[in-house]
Length: 189
Ligand code: ZN
Image (cartoon, rainbow, N blue to C red; front, side):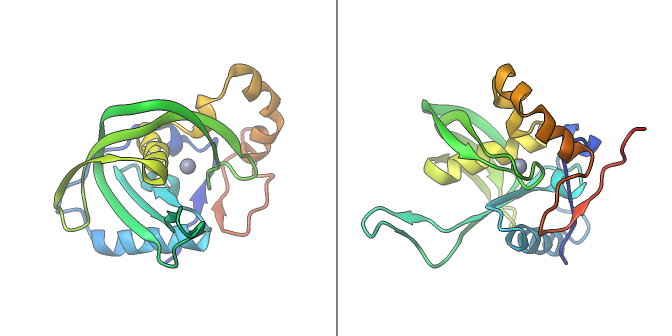
């Protein structure tokens, strides 16, 4: 099942999401649906708050880049992160152009560390504590932000945000068209 995605301006995107446990109802189905929703929207990551569920659950899926062949692998590398926690930021900060399914039509360079050490449970409830680098580290930081009620535009300079104000207002007021389904925000009148 494909979930509609909520956009900037929806209150759930600003909440700190709650951890879950093994008893969470139909978790396998929810995880499968989140992957389906993410791929249906051509995303590389999706956090549960983006489908209006304030829980600490993230799915990530991207085709890994191979330097030797200068191409992307055919199979997506997938990671399900339950209750993830960033333990350490590693390495230099660098810019990378990010977008977000909840902030359509906006792509901006965001400064984050190249690496990060993260602890999480996977979909089998096995505990991981790993040092992530590259694309995985980038997407994980973006998605874990969602669990803290943050979006990538929060990382931009005040000047940059001012310049994007109109576009951001368009998202908040449901004036942006997407080829994937979004749940409209309740707009104040
Ligand atoms: Zn996002």
